[in-house]
Amino acid sequence: MSWYPIALPSLAGRRYLVTGANAGVGFFTAARLASAGAHVVLSGRSPERLAAATRAIRTAEPVASVETLVIDQSSLDSVEAGAERLLTEPSLDGVVANAGIVHTPGVRLESVDGNELVLATNVLGHFALLRDLLPHLSPGARIVSLGSLATRLSSFRVDDLQLTRGYDFWRAYAQSKIATQVFGFELDRRLRAADVPVSSIVAHPGYSISGRTPMVAGVNEPSRGARFADALQWPWAQGKHRGAEIPLHALTASGVEGGQFWGPRHFTRGAPALHTPTRVTTDAGIGARFWSFAEQATGRRFEVAA
Image (cartoon, rainbow, N blue to C red; front, side):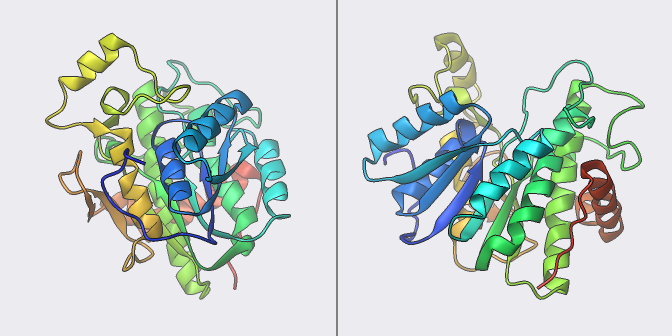
């Protein structure tokens, strides 16, 4: 495929799950894994958009080994049903927890389970999914959670994660991404403590936008006006195909270790490089508080044990 500047090693015989793989960074991550020979499970909530993504991958790579799995990350029942299907298949060598709401609603909404919708979709669904899938990951597997630059631009109300005391669309997104990183780093601490041979890594794709991304039928089709506007941001923006290089590196490159935080070399764009996460996202006390909150919000106890 010509979408990618960085070569991956052969991934023949490996199996990966990419959530939110029907568009954006998730699509390009899944497509690249498939082009390197891996079997990739693309999950998303829309069967039609997943079908379009699959067609696009197979058009570029006719022998790609891909399958689709409908999961609505905001619904715990949907997550559980998806996990049950995955548990009937061979074990996974990695999970890219990418799915999420970027364009958040202007008013506070709740999921079918009664959790704030953005938090439910971006974080709690992955918490429940990984709880179910952890025993099904192969030794040496990696879990990559998608963080964001937004974690540097907002405070974290650890005592109001449901945003019942005040909601705005920016805080909903930023707080969900801070929580995502908190979860990813706390998961790694627990994996290490339990001597589980699985790594949890956090990656952020920089400032990756649709207008600087290749046109892909049914996947990425911004208007001419949107492409023009996005083109004006070229000094600090990159396409989502380039943003996907960061989670791909975290998932497959040699030398990557659990607990690391990867992002673009030039902060908003560029090749993968190690970054320093914000202190709140790596605070063990905050991590423990979030874990307890997530168990209560999902009604699922998440024990990490070998």
